[in-house]
Image (cartoon, rainbow, N blue to C red; front, side, top):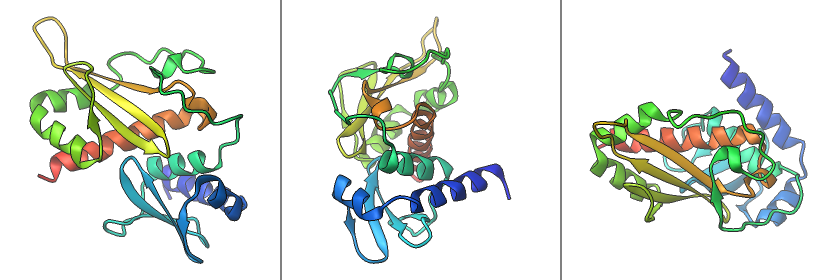
Length: 200
């Protein structure tokens, strides 16, 4: 069993240790006796209330490591009052974040993919429920969960600089998730966009 699968199953057990009724009331989630329904990054998922397994509603496929850990941290994280300010910052400038030196080339390979087909990238963003924003050469705001959003800002390459991607997060993001979960959400978003771009 690989480490990703082990971590995903550990996260499922972690979720099952919480009072589901309390979580359902807190987040006002649709549910029945067997399943909980929620939207994450503009896509619909269901959680089995008995096993904690998370599935995509669209095709019934089990959600991957990044999606599962992100969803369960969003649902279960307990760290102060969850206030959305509508102000955005890079990951190392989030309130409560310790700077770890994430460079601008962190998403370099994905930036190259966008640079090669920017129109398909725009369409992929729209299919993921994002809305355009006036940032960078191409900017989109994506729904994460509840009132939380993330902004993706892209710049084309030129003769001096490579293409680049920056993600901007709600400045209070760390009241909603642990620091490492921000990167799980980022991984889930980029993978989702790659799937959308490759499906056409």
